[in-house]
Length: 101
Image (cartoon, rainbow, N blue to C red):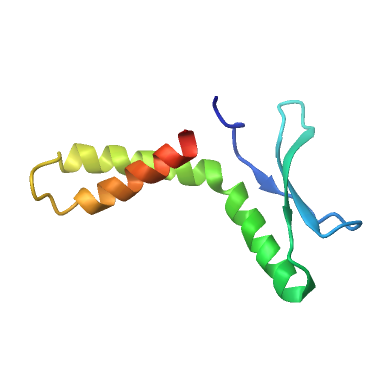
């Protein structure tokens, strides 16, 4: 199953509860909410909740950036034994696999 198309947005915090809705704009201009990021309470928790919401909202762009980086590394530096880019390739491959499993 493919994820909801980006861009995703961290929207304005709900005033009746300590959570930030995450969604995306539909072609008709309406907003679809598909997740909420809860704060942990207090100023620190609210700040952390805001940061978590921004990170989640950036997920589609981060995945696209990793896929581009992977393709670029493969094109510029094809895998060879003892390749200095192998560690980076592995990290990128695992992150993409986790996001698309």
